[in-house]
Image 1 (cartoon, rainbow, N blue to C red):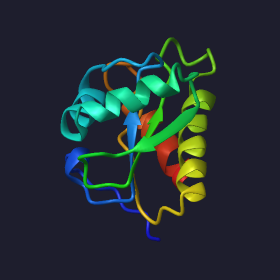
Image 2 (spheres, rainbow, N blue to C red; image 1 turned 180 degrees about the vertical axis):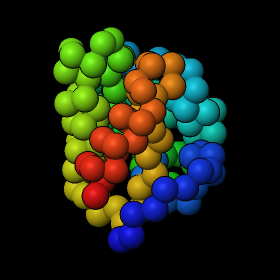
Image 3 (cartoon, rainbow, N blue to C red; image 1 turned 60 degrees about the vertical axis):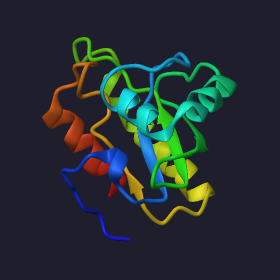
Image 4 (cartoon, rainbow, N blue to C red; image 1 turned 30 degrees about the vertical axis):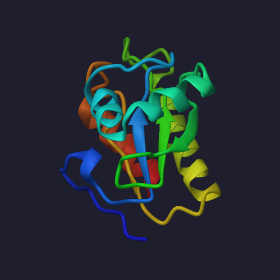
Length: 136
């Protein structure tokens, strides 16, 4: 499967799995998380509550409900502090764990947002480097 960077609204992509930048708690956050929940419908939050808390750097999977995907992979990215608090390793772990879950479910396509680079303040150039490295 080719690797491609696409600037698109992730909730409208037709893929096997969409990765959600999930809050560690089973609540609807801002940005990508809110957009995914709005498009997927109320059942996504119910499924997310069944999972419970998600540790930073880990990922969990649910059905995608009303999205154009089979699954939503919820991953809890790190909040950028100073770059010396393990943020890069935790972000890499988000990508690794999300890809592992996608492989376990035989996904052939997956859409990632640039995890932690919005309200969590991760510098976009560093986040992009990590994303490309881990996805490649």
